[in-house]
Length: 390
Image (cartoon, rainbow, N blue to C red; front, side):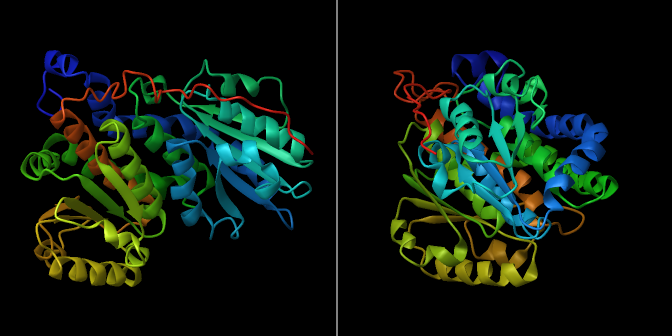
């Protein structure tokens, strides 16, 4: 069974694809690492031809969850890439490339896309081609039959990585596709040797498997016990990008019934904290970095002291009794050693996916297609693309 549901029950509740795709992620992460392992040397060598130049840009792009892959990624990669990494939405590049792209600077545009068929995925590539004079492309997608993957054929300025078919989520919301595209790019652009990368991912995968088999029940119980109408996800550095994706999952799977917000713990005090009322669930993703965690703990103490009927969930990679005492719910992945936030996000986002799944089901919504009337679609519709004015 998946999340204690039989296949018949999942089908009857229209959650079979979503639940399966959330649950399968640890196994797909191994698939992605095994797929990329033979390609690392050639890909890193090709990327080095760009990053060895005196000045350059590495720009991650996508729309929706595919944009948030880059938002979570570029922060941790900036030290590796000499602080030349950025993340911009493909929707922004399509409309106004002049604000995001350099005409003359050597640029590597890394496009993330689940289906590769969204108008903006293709439009961003076309806009960049028209605007930039020194441009290379890397496509990371989950659909071998998608238009984006097809654009790479016959081009010498482009590399394309199509991940395993299992990552091409059939559900409305991106889950496996998000984490696997993120992991693929982290592996390719990161500076960890393959052995260290695999050792770190062994820990991440082990903790993720344990959570998805047993500890997920904490999220299910939280949803059943607390009828929250608002949710806030907070994370620092790379974890802020994962918080952004987490908030979107709640909006998508509940068809907007739950107001969802994300921020950094430090930024939350500067206005966004106004969202907290008696029906708010605040989820704090805790970093393993001591210098960062002290600020996060300060906010946790503050939120805890101001609690009324609202609730707090803290998420940690290790059993932190101090943090656990300050919140209503506490989830620990019990990793063997402390890891960078760039890796922890893969575990933490599973919690958000599960909360969104169970909250959707609590409303009687089918997570596989939460908007059957068609106002919002799995692949965006109704977008017109116009020629780029260079």
